[in-house]
Length: 291
Length: 334
Ligand SMILES: Cc1ncc(C[n+]2csc(CCOP(=O)(O)OP(=O)(O)O)c2C)c(N)n1
Ligand SMILES: [Mg+2]
Image (cartoon, rainbow over all chains, first blue to last red):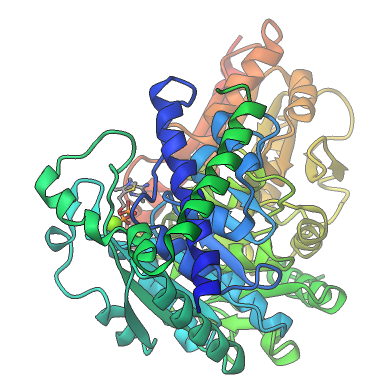
């Protein structure tokens, strides 16, 4: 179990350091446009994605997708180049932070818009009969987009291997979730006949275990499923745009998914992993002459 | 001779027989109903696993088709009425056309088929020609065969040659028309133009140069057999150009033939204002500056909702008479 946690923790640390670096590069003027970091939500990306098979499973992601991408591909260089706008980036600099693609990974900047596409990919996987699963990440805010409900209906109707992952971080840009939703989000996939499990989204091991179980089950009986991860966005929406009180944010610091893992792992292991990841990030920055 | 509808049905059959990656999705497309305009009649019986009847979710099924297209299939989506394409706009514009552009090594061979046009009393939300809403979108093609084309062959060409999204427009009033062939009264040439699609070129005269060049597409063709004969009787020589690719438009070919006449009328059924015709006209002005005998005349439907009642509908939609009057007007210029 601890071996799993070490592997999961390492991925979370790498994502955290990568994104903290992005914010630094932004403030130094090396990046333009925008970046949405998943600081505080790394367990969602890592717990879900580590349970997938990147050869046959596909991942559709959203505006807050660096964590999903790194957990799926481990390609820090390609992603940084893309965000820096270099021709050698994974999308030649056209996509930037929100529009990423390599192999089975696709992200786009239109909230909810990837859900029908993930549903179509799930249909292709069902037709191909290779037991692949189509996973799509959305936020709580995106769950008000109508096309998601059209997709859930089709996914249920056609028994497609679609896994909808809702990262419920309780906020959408500046608006708290209770000003946007008239009912509990987790009830909605259920209304379409899609079994939905609500999980502590800051506990990476629990997410990983639940995803493994769900994915195994989906490979055996083609059926759509939903996992709702209760989490919290510790960072700003994009760069510095945060109007939440510092007391609110700091009350969630103890629940930081990295800190949660650190309470379980031996200190020596934690230090080792942190050093390893920091070295990797430093080497990357050196190779770009950014430090 | 077959009708436009039969030609299209046969084309889909051939396509499905020759290419197992083609999948059709749409509302009410299964037999025995076979689609609201019967374009898919018989298809689901022959290919039950590749013709999917869908929930009434136009945006959703467009997205599903895009997912299929990204993963190696060639999806054809039937949108029951072209008016409903507005519901698909986000998936087409912000997803399907963006992927091949912003991702590396990705194609998105999505085909959206839909009937457009009025004249059947379907009223304001089932009669429009909304293709102008989708013009000028990078990586998006709009193909609208007339009844001088072979729509069944065109759809096969799209499915086998195109790697990115295409909207395929079928005018409702063409379905029952018999496809027009070359005839002595109205010589027809189908020429492959610079877009790779065919432009139908019609002349209502044997020798000499044309008085007027008439440019149109899709359903406009239904007016031409009668109108061109009538004008021939009045010794008005017309060259009519009907490109089936309306975006990109074969501007070089259009300019080449339009230059012969020096007087140009462009006709389309969409409502007046920011039209296909205005886009063509501005390009022709640039190409033919100094060679035109008079301003280009554009004919469209009136800028209003299309009424259901028969006379009211006829009053606002483009008609053969509107086109004829425009032709007479450009001739009247010295
Ligand atoms: C269709 C659409 N509407 C609005 C936006 C602008 N926007 C980007 S992120 C965001 C908030 C999204 O909230 P949520 O789905 O909860 O994801 P989170 O940012 O919390 O991860 C908004 C409104 C967008 N990108 N797409
Ligand atoms: Mg949110």
